[in-house]
Image 1: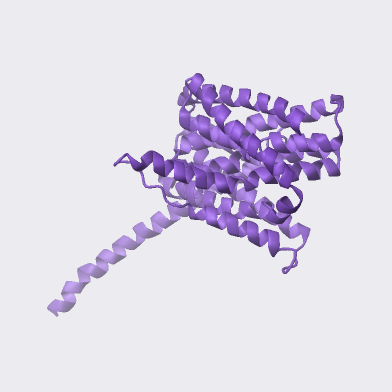
Image 2: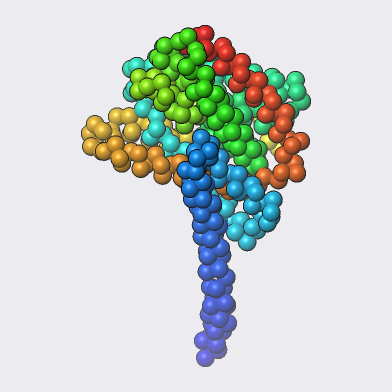
Length: 350
């Protein structure tokens, strides 16, 4: 009897803990749902004329930032929001690998890769150097340089864990790159009829100079299918360079922290391995040994964008506008100057 009575408090204690566990799981799921809902609103808003050039990712980040300023950070939902900002972000990067057709780039775009390498190197070095001259925040300048040179928001999201960038810098960088890239892509479409170049030349120029795949598609489409195809091919070469760039950054961070006993340990980002595997799978299996429809790939692409947008909502909620002007203005100026110079220079080498 005594032994049985001794077990009674344990049973009661477990029963008392269960509601707490259920509540924590509920709040965790609610946090994820919160980011998903704002992402959905961003998608709807991006269909509205005027906002359709901005894209769902930028729209969702703006909504998240505004929510933070009006209502504060929803602390009760933090675990789920952070899950979206961390885990969903990595999952989106893995799926993003399907957008990269390695086979096409290697067989048809090898000459473009040389120019892509020059663009990536110039964008990063120029933005970081200008940021230093302007006394901008180094981490944000580096993120913007990588986003400008490689593939916009996806590149920033991929390198942020490697560089140990904080969520606010990542969100600010993504917001700036989306805004500036949209402005440049619209400017390209306005200038195109007045430029003394062929549609193919225009497509290559767009592909090696604009910030994101969506921006390249927006600028290249009005010039025709051939121009759009070569523009996307040139852009995919820059996306391919994200892989070696990440490994270079890992090596650089390890060297940087090697003499610092308190330095954070830099581990291989396993989502990058997933990105490579998905790229190989999409390049050599899908559509060849595995039959798929264009509609399926379009659906996967939209799902990837939606997941990435949900993750960006989690990051956007960390942005405090009171600190934004002091932190973002100078890196923004550095990135703008780099983007303008890049557009002018690549016009002549495209």
